[in-house]
Length: 269
Image (cartoon, rainbow, N blue to C red; front, side, top):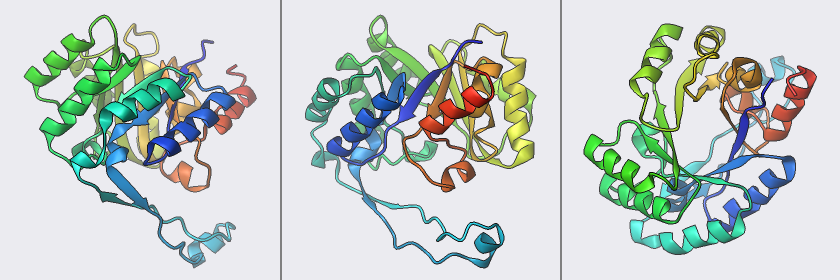
């Protein structure tokens, strides 16, 4: 059973924070790391933790409820992207995916689409191993970026859907619509439990013999099923994090070390 590529999405909103997380990802055995360039243009504000609720105590958790951070946007000219890219190139040992996710796809980049495209051009020009290009980028602009990347930077074609998957067949249709748009097709859906998690699992199972390289996942309860069972499903790329905490499973995410332990326990390794 072939082990999928483990990509750790690095945490942090500054170059130093991202580099520190990259060192942790390297130490645990990640194969690849994703730098979310869009987060350089926000400041993370951590809220005061809430008191544990009755429902949390009923679950036996006895922990304060998780409160997500607030991301405060900054001006586009507040970041020297060339210096940041140079720092990542020098300071990260693993191959890198550079991503600049727009707000419409769940990201944090606060500038215009033209400014974001300029960041993606700079990312490709830096000679990075991988770049993430959303499938909904203007077709002419996306073709230009693909041509710039051709022969030197591989492309992850991504689409983050705000709704839950309708069915396994619809997921496969979404992927088929993206064929030829990148070296790996990444689709992510909102998930709320067993039903949506099973749809992702079924779609991945139906595509396991396909030559199309995919990364299928969810954000929400049940969204981590295709990550945990990625070797069984012949997924090519699995996203994880160095973050820890019980909130990860409710977000469909998984810690990289926990992922490797799960694969070992399931005899996937």
